[in-house]
Image 1 (cartoon, helix red, strand yellow):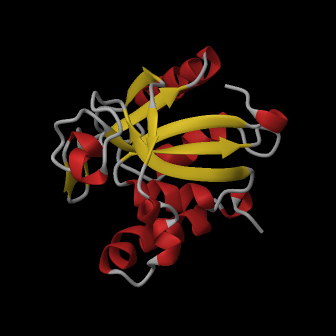
Image 2: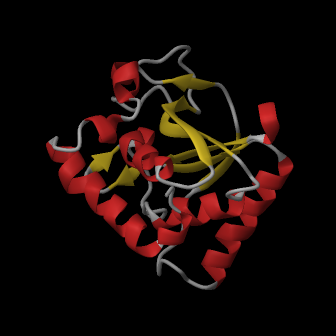
Length: 182
């Protein structure tokens, strides 16, 4: 999906959107990250609606990026390096369908790249367990409430942020230093 000024959009669900948003906001070439809900049946869902897991929505992020600075393939690499794609409807202690691992592709190229990347990881037995990440066509993305946006950067001392998100950010900074904003 092309948008203004040659930017593209990627949509990933990889557990809690506070975690995934915090990771992708660090990347060079990422212009905007929005937390929200996708893949369900409820119109205009709220956080309270999706928390019980029966709306079908996943907590997800919509990433606006410049493909001249960071490729969709690089985004996939970071996505798979910063969550567990082998646990069905779960990331750590976050359990429910809203925490599933899913890529919502915006065009045939994103779909193919996602399929090829997962096939490569399976052939290399990257995780030692089956990958359960789904690949689906993008559907209506609902922006989450304002207090969920840029959550980690505004709440770093909150317990969940300190114990769950900060280690992910530290790993990102150590392993992917060359891909981070300066």
